[in-house]
Image (tube, rainbow, N blue to C red):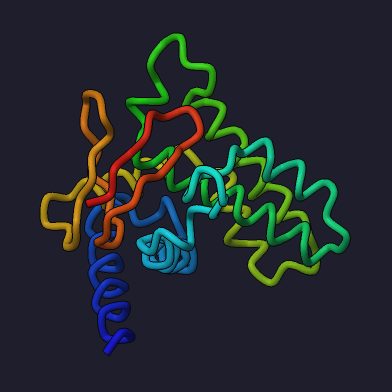
Length: 193
C-alpha cells in the first residue's frame, strides 16, 4: 500500500529530526513537524522538480520562482510560489552545502540561504497565512534549518536509493527509483538510478 511507505518515511524522518535537532530550544515542535513533513514530501522528485518538455525534470532557478511570486495573479498563488521557493532553497542548501560554498560559483550557499529566508519571511508577514509562525521561525533560523536537513539526509541509515553529485565531496540524497536525468540550476546533471 502506497500510504504505508509514506507513513514509514514520515516516522523515519521524524525520528531523525528529533535525533539531529540537538538543542531542543532551537526549533519549536511545530517547526520540527513541518521539517519532517517537508522531507517526506520532497523525497518524491515530483514534489521538488518541475517538468520541462525540452530538458525533462529540472530544478527551477530561485530567481524564476521569485519572479513568478511577484507576478502572481492572487495572494494564494503568490504564497504557493514563495513556499516553493523557500522549500527548494531549504532542501537544496541542506543537501549540497559544500558544492554551493566553493569559490567562483555563480550561485552560492549564501544566495540560497538568503533567497530561502526571504521567501519564508514574506510568508511569515502574510496575515492570511495560517503557518506564519512556523515560516517566521524557519526564516529567522534558515542556516540552522538547512544544517538540520543536511544531517538527516546524510545519515548512513537513510532508506531508499541514494544518488551522488558528480564531484567531491559526495552528498547523499533520497529520490525514488527509476532511470531519469535531472538538470539542477548551477549543478552538473545528476543521474537518478
